[in-house]
Amino acid sequence: MGQTALQAQIGEHRNDLSVGVNGGYVMSNVKFSPKVQQGQHGGITGGLAMRYVCEKYFKTIASVYAEVNYASLGWKEKILDRSNQPVINKVTGLPEDYSRTINYIQVPVMAHLAWGREHKGLNFFVNLGPQFGVYMSESTKTNFNLADRNTDDRVSTVVAQDTMAVQNKFDYGIAVGLGAEYSIPKAGHILVEARYYYGLGNIYGDSKRDFFGSSNFGNIVIKAAYLFDITKTKK
Image: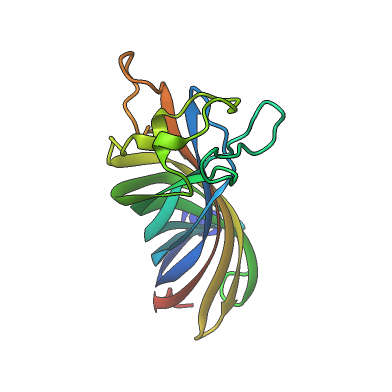
């Protein structure tokens, strides 16, 4: 009897399943080596979300949280001269602009740990876990012909990435997020989150024969999700 009471005190079982939708904005770049100067590439992400709450351990609400998203990632180059000014194209007379958009289906599967109100009100949470991505398509946006780019004035002569299609179609890495959730009984759960993703795979080959030693993603995601309950633990 004493052991049963102790177990109940330490960990309270839950069987709460919620599903819904999520969406947000992604700021991404690619960590090239040799380095390519970049700003942030902006894109959207959105899809389905699922959470399964399995236990409340002391004050920590422990869950598994997963998504299936369509996401637009990529990079946007900062084409500068030696004075840190935009490079002017000699044909168009305009500052040179180049960006690449790469679309993925992404699946993050994360531990979701929350503290605060469980059924009604506000709590704060941390997400942490692996993320996997499958390449779907890519497109380039530029305001000059690549054959006419002004390589004389550029501070960086690294341009191989401008004409290289993605070689590795599978992406993987680690995602970590901080957020807040507001729960409304019988209405659902509203979650807002800031998340960072660090890619462990490269989009291009990284052997000694390849041009780039690394070409992995770094993404900052601001997103919101709405979940509604499918099953709830009986009180």
